[in-house]
Image 1: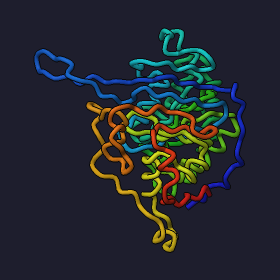
Image 2: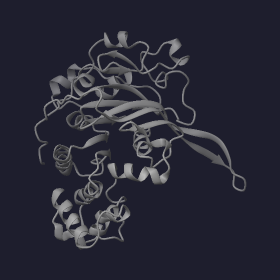
Image 3: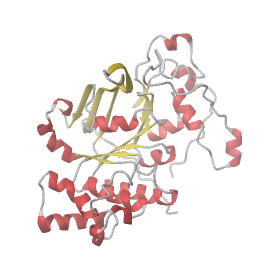
Length: 354
């Protein structure tokens, strides 16, 4: 297996240098019933009033269980889904208010790397056609200039430029994902949503992809929203981490502080479930076992979304929803009793960032 490159040094960012600022974002999907006459009988609260920001040049990791709304958040930020409510400010402009035509210049600066390299590439198109398609849509290059830019981008992501005439089925999963990365980079964007870009790849290939993304970020000064399940990978690649549960962001902090001092009970439960390769350490730590199942986003619980499964829940947790508030410098938590939880026994063994 290719080892992940040494951890980059911590970067600092100016508060005013915010590239993306999301305010009170909501994304609801209607639930319809009826064969002849369809009627809306409810809504899936996929993303329910979340706020966060991403600074220029940093990577914000977004983690949580499957179905919590991570991928929907990424698509709503890019306006692939039109948000139900809320605002997405890109360099100070609220892009949710823009028309389709006015949004075109912003789409050049915001791209996405999709999770499934097998489904995200058109099998009827050649690799060259797939990578060149954004150039054609935005009318940025044609003829020999377009072909040369495609070949150069294939070189950048580590592929043979002469593969441009081949089709996606002729490539492995890792190579297909590199094609997806080349397609995302061809327009020279500033911001990229990485929607679980390594989860469908073999473990032996995942480290190579992470190293590639880090190298490209440094080379092109990219800003990432990195969505993933693997907590060790998120700590390695991210500058800050946001934890999501049933459509809500429950904790946001610097990567090291979040992993070494988690204050929300859900974050603590997530980290306690990660196995530690050292048997002595594994035997000496406690596990937080969550009861019940993840609630339905169609009928989310009242008050705190996590209270039905929270081992620290109290009676008033079901009455009012805790706001996401800054309880320590640059550490935000949505929990009424974070102090009591944070002072409890240490059940977490920090995940090594290397």
